[in-house]
Image (cartoon, rainbow, N blue to C red; front, side, top):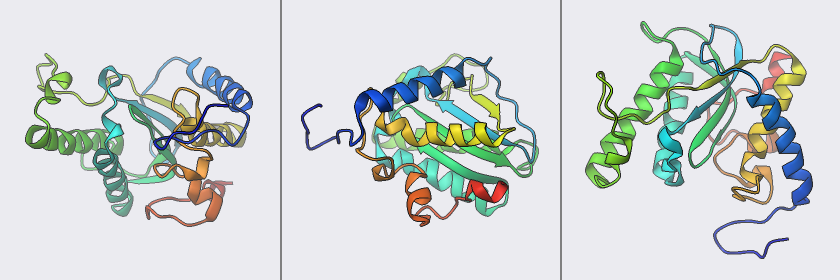
Length: 210
């Protein structure tokens, strides 16, 4: 067992058990061909990764941008969110596209809005960081999210529950060690499923689907 430090927690579970379980889930998830297409009214496991795996979400104010954007889309009845986790360089969601946001799917709006908000802040407060997101695309100068998000249709209860477990176990991975218990990690839905309290005011219990 690793020694404690004041910045990170250690596992309360046996590390080998947690990491073995996570490895099984991860291999199953990423064995599939990557696909970002989603249909309205279907439930998907979704992974969005920051360009070049930059750890932009190590900064809490950028996690809050994600939270606020999800809440706004839920309040406008564009999406339903069943589970999420925000990691330093990626995020996972189990969510449902309810209706288009204007002429685009809500996940496209999510990516656009989070990118805009974060880049505006970087320009003002952290201009030295902005060049790391520079791209040569004809339609944009900077890119926050990689082009290859992953969408997996949740077409069985077993698959749905496995992916939600995967989401909540992310912060406990050996490569991160961000918390001791899943519900201790502030930036996920684990505490909601443990306590029934939705501190973010946008979550829907997946068991409502069953």
